[in-house]
Image (tube, rainbow, N blue to C red; front, top):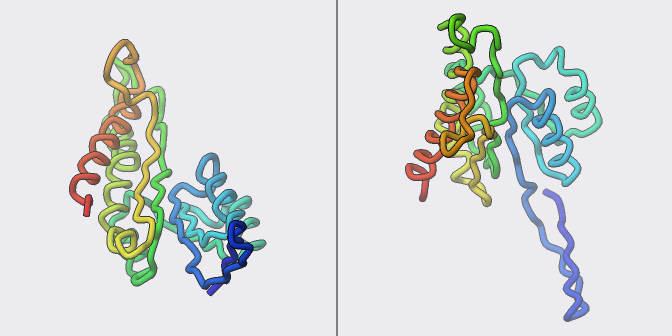
Length: 194
């Protein structure tokens, strides 16, 4: 357990009290936004559970983990329900203050326009970008519920907006998956409101 120190200037007192280190679980933690989330939370002394499909090729993430024992790198594919359940079981009883569903794929752009639509790529994008966050929220809801902050976050995209003049053509799988993610998160907010 770490000791947090707060100075109460108005009373010229220094209070020291034990506190629990906050914990964040980040999917897609091996590059881009996910890797930056790892850096930023670790710099603030959080315990970071960093999820990637291929830890063996995640050089920057592994370097961060080697330098900070509060960063735990875990292998997980957010489309694999069995591995999601196994990871949730591994961390059973561990409160997770923030679950950041960051893992996502753009998909093959050549199969996301009219005349070249491809079902398998569409399904892969939907599974990763929409089903993955929903499955993670379901599997880790007790972890989040038992924490102090109780937050589930999903990284969406402006490409999912369907109002006004913002809808463009193409990117059908990606846009659909992010729009689905948005409505799924709204449903989760209702179902997990307590």
